[in-house]
Length: 220
Image (cartoon, rainbow, N blue to C red; front, side, top):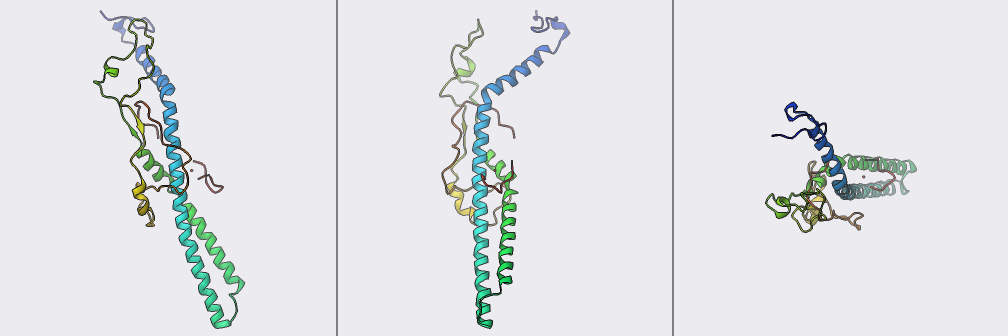
């Protein structure tokens, strides 16, 4: 004998969808309560590492451009003294400075445009694992069958984890070979202290849903 609907009390023969809809609402509410902090940790970790990568990528591009600019100034200076025994004309210096500024703007634009692939790369390094179905905490959860109340807090020491991916230090040398590949770029170890630590160990979850602190940086 099938029980009546626990929500609208309609007979089971009517096959109403009240309980299915109620379960969906309860799942969303429980996920928001238990998983939002994990999502926030992952988002902060990914954002910080992506910003570090983009800033370092931009620094390497601008260093190369500034080196080329210095060499250009040396050439026009040597040319002016060789033929005119005088420093370069101010217009030549101004033109070289303007060219450098345009180049730096282009470098910053090219760096910022890499955010989507860099963010996806760091999100792909996050590992989410679920406990085995045969674990005791899964097969016999610490819940009271009579009252429905929880008898114990969140279990500790289980296999469900949220952790960052493997070490990225070995990719640093590849990063210095510009231009970098356009898919899944090898991230860099930053030259400064990380602003955001890697996510803490937590219990299992679903995969989370799917930049520098600089005055030039657009909002993401």
